[in-house]
Amino acid sequence: MSYKPIEIDREKLTIMGVDFGSVDNFDAVANALGTVMFEGFDPTPKSIEIIRDYLADKISIGQLVRLTKEKAYA
Image (cartoon, rainbow, N blue to C red; front, top):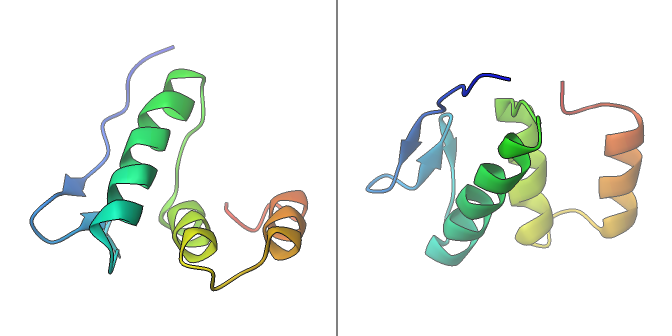
């Protein structure tokens, strides 16, 4: 498995172009991505939006599970 770098801008609080309004959520997602990418996860901007929205309480855990089952992150 090879390493695929992703664009992370700590000054603008963006990951793959996805804006974060909270430093805490930005850091949480950036750290989590490092871990799951090591396990083989290939993030997309859509998957990052879904994770961001869950952490910002914009979607519920039920909606997160549904989106994951539907593979809405692709």
